[in-house]
Image (tube, one colour):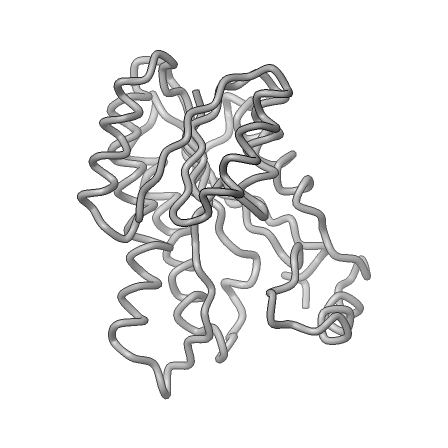
Length: 236
């Protein structure tokens, strides 16, 4: 089984479906999106693979503990983890509250570490893998989303450290999406203006991220790498 956090919708959902099509049972984590999670579970079962719904607020370490207790009791041994759950609120450094700083880091970074730590104990006997979903914009200075950017940059460093920590039994890599899905508050015009600046002049699709995850899951000689799926965004 592969546990995918934040798998109810958006990129996490597409990753879960792609893994299911590749023959993995899915541990489908969600926080509050129960209806979307149930719909995704139905789609996975229509593919012909089993799925387990797992609810948890990953900002709470106690709920992470409970999540992995549920995973350990499953009849499907854990072979992989995709840390996809994240938030991206406006987070300017000149007007940010301590509470929002902590909320972003607790989900985007600390939860990925804790989930990886808990998952490693279950994965080690099977020489599995962990894949973090980072962001291709970590080298940019997004002042409107500064703390999100910091958390994702730290996630990439965490990826490399985990790769060293858990080698050789567990491979740890990251996928860094570029412009894939517009934020809900962004207008179509603003989104298109961003896309037109890219060297390839097109945005990516969630399926592009899923294919990168599958590549990393299946290649037994890659670890400690961050693969950018960004239409050349990092060249700007």
